Amino acid sequence: MTEQSMLFRQVLGAFATGVAVVTTKRQGCYFGLTVNSFSSVSLDPMLIQINIAKNTTSHEYITESGYFVVNILAEDQRQISNIFSGAPPAERFQHVRTWETGSGCPVIEGSLSYIEVKIVETFEGGDHTIFLGEVLQMQTLRDDAQPLLYFRGKYGRLAPEEE
Ligand SMILES: Cc1cc2nc3c(=O)[nH]c(=O)nc-3n(C[C@H](O)[C@H](O)[C@H](O)COP(=O)(O)O)c2cc1C
Image (cartoon, rainbow, N blue to C red; front, side, top):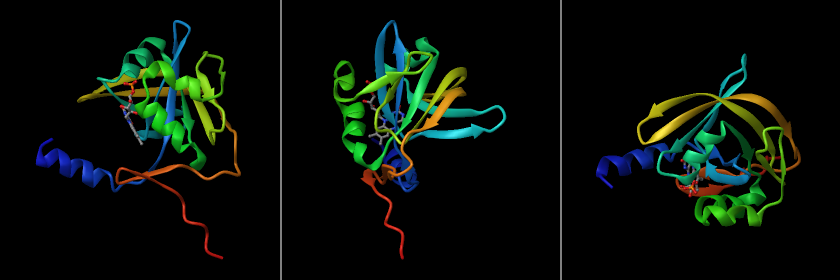
């Protein structure tokens, strides 16, 4: 890694984010990976975006599927984030319970909320592809739980509210 790319990582790592697992289904098989480059794009129509590295296994499957689900992780799902960023792709779904949306993509039980989208456009983004998704369906699953956070390459949690 060059000095500039290390600086890029360090500077961008100061932008605290939530953590999500993007899931998809292709030819009857589930695939998924951990992401934090997820954001809302437009309210009318409702659009969201994710940025996926071209060298991931998931990149090909998301592209071919045309649909994906963004599962927004709760504080107690850190292990799931580790599995979906580190375990072999074929083993990841052995560690979670899921159910399917209309497009067949799996929703991970215990997530704070999920958004099912259809890919409407893709853009070149250097070594990543930007996937723009139109919202098909979404739901809050847990409004009592706290989010999993990511900051400077480490997981974090919200500080309790001061009385
Ligand atoms: C907190 C966190 C956030 C991540 N965000 C992204 C992301 O936004 N896009 C991406 O392509 N990879 C991201 N990754 C890396 C992927 O999860 C990782 O490379 C994964 O192993 C890819 O799996 P695959 O090659 O099986 O598809 C992130 C990893 C972590 C731990």
